[in-house]
Image (cartoon, rainbow, N blue to C red; front, side, top):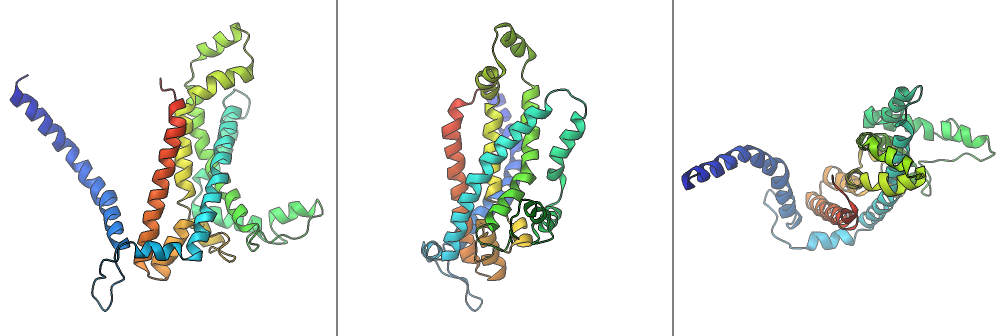
Length: 294
């Protein structure tokens, strides 16, 4: 191919990519750069734009006890919900991967919470957590436990939010594991049976390694979900009591739309983006080496 033909192909390729690149910049990179600029500026006064203040907004942010509480709550929230959701999703996928009567119905039950809107999920669990009348209090009363204000007690509010998140997303992750399990060649099971390998050995040495790409994807998705929770907090606890269930995105929401402190909200957003990027990079660094693509 001549040099002119190659140049035309390169130019044609860039022209094909250009609409998608412009779309990504307009709706992703552009707003992120605008948020970064806002986080480095002061609040506008009397119609005049705020001047450059450097890292002052970030300094004020880390001096705010509400932000630090939301940050620590979110880290604990992710530390609990991510591994529990992943393990539960894998267990459910293994359970419904075999043929048995009612398998399709059980799969539907596992996936049903994922199909419910966020507001509906919050309303359902508000009923479960209602003191004295809720399903959980009725269940604990059978073992002699007193009334528990799940969402009104600082010791249980965040744990209650974790229960909702795990219930909501485990079925979604199950679908990915189920698809990955069904893509494992049957010949591997036959070869393991001929060699006399136990199910536990086959699961540990064959199934888990082959599920590596799916596990990495699910874990990264679960981490992102853990730091993007705001619907349930708004409907169920409003971040209370005493910020016990406040999370980072809820802090951003309050700063930007309740207090109209756009610059602090922008700084908190940048912190959230940096934190998510660091956690994603850590997951790829730790688990990426053990992932086997085929």
